[in-house]
Image 1 (cartoon, rainbow, N blue to C red):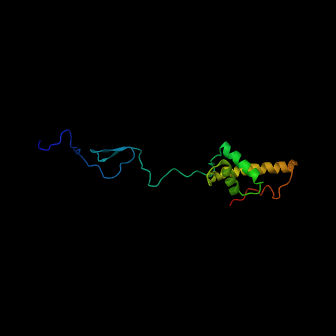
Image 2 (cartoon, rainbow, N blue to C red):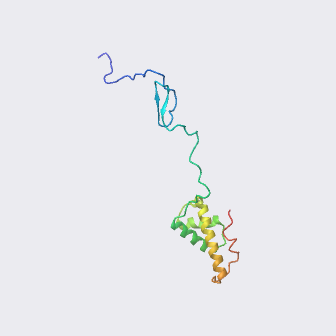
Length: 144
C-alpha cells in the first residue's frame, strides 16, 4: 500500500550505440552493437516521390456504356460538335456528373476519329442520305 505499481515493467535501454531519432528506413531495424540500420529495402524513396504519371500511350478505355453514349451523342449532334460538346452530351445520356468523362478525353477522341472515318467512308461510297454541311474530316476534331 505504498503506491507501488503492480504488473508494470519499466523498459530497459539496451546497451550499445543508441538508436538515432527519426523514422527508420523502410523495413530496417537498429543494430545496437554495430550502430547502424540492418535490413530494409536499401535506399529510401526521396520525399514527394510517387508513382510516375501515366504516359500518353496509356489511354483509359471507355466502358461499353460510355462508348455507346459517345456514339449516341455524335449521332444527336449531327457531327458538327467539338469533342467537349460530345463529352458533355454523353455524360448527360449516361446521367453522369459534368466533367466525369474528362479523364477519358483520349478515348473519346479515338471514338470520334473512328466515327469520322466511318462517316467519310460511307460518304465516299454514296451510302449517306444527305451530305453534312461541314466536312467530316473537320467534324469533332476541334478541342475547346
